[in-house]
Image 1 (cartoon, rainbow, N blue to C red):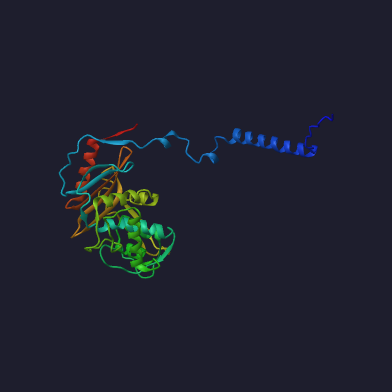
Image 2: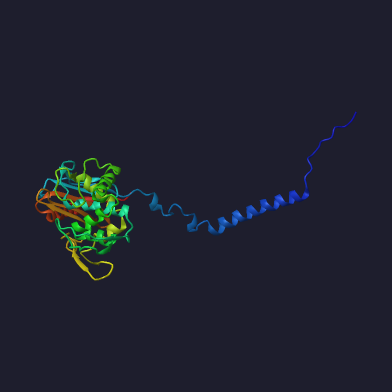
Length: 309
C-alpha cells in the first residue's frame, strides 16, 4: 500500500522573510507612536478635561416674584442652559426697534469677511454716524458702528452692499431667523424703523441675543463704551459713544443692544455676567429700560443660584 503524502505549499524563503519584516516594522511603529504621542494634542480631537463632559450648572430660582418694572414685557434666560428664570408676556408681539440690528450684524458677518471694503452712500433716516459719499470702510468698521452707536447709515450700507441690495439683505435676515425657528419674528428693514409688519417677541429676541453671543467679534464689540473708527484713508474719523448707558455703571453688564421708537418705546437686550454665570435680559415697551434692566439684574443676584453638579 502506498503511503499518502501530506503536501505543504512551497514557501519562498525571501517572501517569508519580507512579510515578517513588514509585520515587525508595523508593530514597532504602532508602539512608538502610542508611547511618544499618545498624550499629544494631535490626537486630542475631544478635549481631555473632564469639564467637557460636565453639563453646565443648573440655575435654581428661589423666588419667582418679579420686581416692579415700567413694562410687563421682560425675560431673563440663563445663557448656558437656555432656562427661563423669569418672564412675562414673552410671546406677545412687540416692535423690536434697533434691537433689529443684532440680526443685521449677524447677517452681515455671515455674508461678508470682516475686512471686506464697502464704498459708502449717505443715509439720513434715524440715528446716523454721518457717512459721506464714496468713503472706503471695512465691514468691521460698519458692524462696530452698528452695534455700539446704533448707526442706521452703517446698517444701510451693510444691507445695500449685498448683491441684490437692501431687499435681498432683509430676506437673508429673515432666512436667519427661520433657520433658528424664531417663528414669531419678521423683518421688513435692516435698521428697525417702525413698520407694522416688522415685529418680534421678547423670547425671540432673547434667542437672537443668545446666537449673537456665540460670535467673538460681537461679544468684544458690544463691551465698548466708546470706539474710534475711521475710513481706510484715515482722513475721516468717527468717535462714537455707546447707546448702552449701563456699560461702566453696572459691573454685571457686558453689552448688548438698545432700541427705541415712539411705537416700540424703550427696548434693551442685556448681556449679563453674575460671578461668571452668563444671563440675557430683554425688556420691551419700557418707559425706563435701563432701570428695568438694573432691577432684573438685582433680582437675579438675590434669587438665582447655580447647582454645579
